[in-house]
Image 1: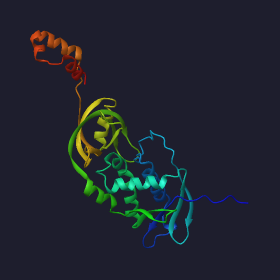
Image 2: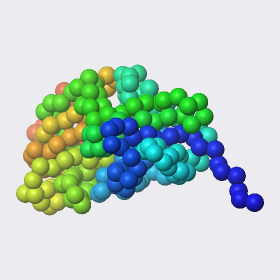
Image 3: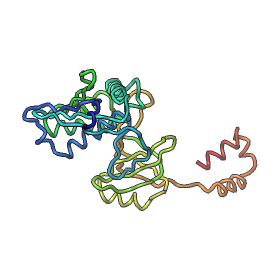
Image 4: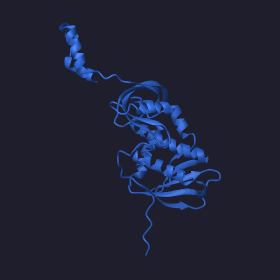
Length: 266
């Protein structure tokens, strides 16, 4: 007796004129399901040069394809997957209430919007149990989100160069103080990427164009490096010697010598 078919969790639908399974290339389907998985686990999509640094326990398996339409019935190994998708959608709709979560969902939102634009269709996620739509993405979804919730402007950052390169897109990963994860930055040309590569593991000051998620503490969710300067590292011993040579009266103006010296150390 064949095993009983598992109960599906959700359905991904591609809706549009002339849309059917044979027209959807595997890479578009793979990108879509990967982005849906990222929404459920509430994490950004790694780039080609970014390793997955945090394991997760939510997987998606394609159960069947509904013939006559482009509907992909999926199962997951977690019963709360649909609930988590609803939470992700809520953060996308109103990022000001959950800016930390919303910042991690921008890349899957961008991917789903790009696939929908390429295929000239809408992508809908439905709950298989309630048969209700969770959310709909189209080719304008990311553009609308960007217009309403992202602010672009020039800024300067300090950080350590951790990775440089990329299989498809030139990028540089910076370790920014008080930021838990690396900031992956776009680099516009090969000359600049070579200069950054020569500063691997050095502290630098970069300037360029940043995308800020409005609300909360204005988290940087994207950055393009347009130039940089290597930070000058202070030799604390040399600085203290100069202060000593300048005379003991200098310290009369320093309220907290310990904090002052820690500041010199950076």
